[in-house]
Amino acid sequence: MSAFFVFAGLSISIYAEENGSKKETKKEAIQQKEKSNPYARAKITAKIIPSANKTFGYEIIVNGKTVVRQPNIPALSGNEGFTTKKRAQKVADFVVKKIRNNEMPPTVTIKDLNSMNVLKKD
Image (tube, rainbow, N blue to C red; front, side, top):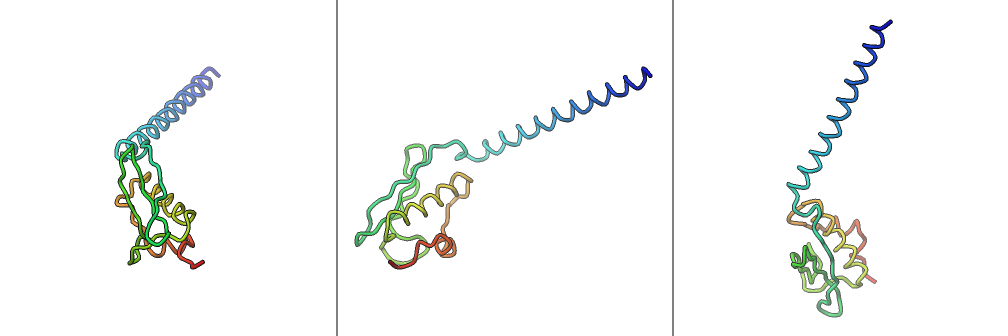
C-alpha cells in the first residue's frame, strides 16, 4: 500500500515537472519571436494623407518615424490614391498588420486590394 502512495507521488511530481517545462518552453518561444521581430511591441500608427485629384493615400509611422508613404494605390500604375478615406484606412490597417507580423517589405497585391473591396468605382 505504501508503494502505491510513493508511485502516485512520483507520477504527480513528474507531471508537474513536465507541465512546468512546457510553460517555460512556450515562454522562451514567445521571447524568441519578439527578439526576432523588432515590430512585435513597436508603436505603429497609420495616417491618411491627401493625394492627387482629391484622393487619399496613407503613411505608416513606426516609433515616430515614417516608414511607408503611399500617396497612390499600391500595385496599380498612376498617381491617384483611393477615392475615400475609409478605403485608404482599410489598406493602411492591412499594411500595419503586415509590419506587426514582420512581413517586410509589407507588399500589397491587386488580389489583396480586390479582397478588401477598395478598387470598385463609386
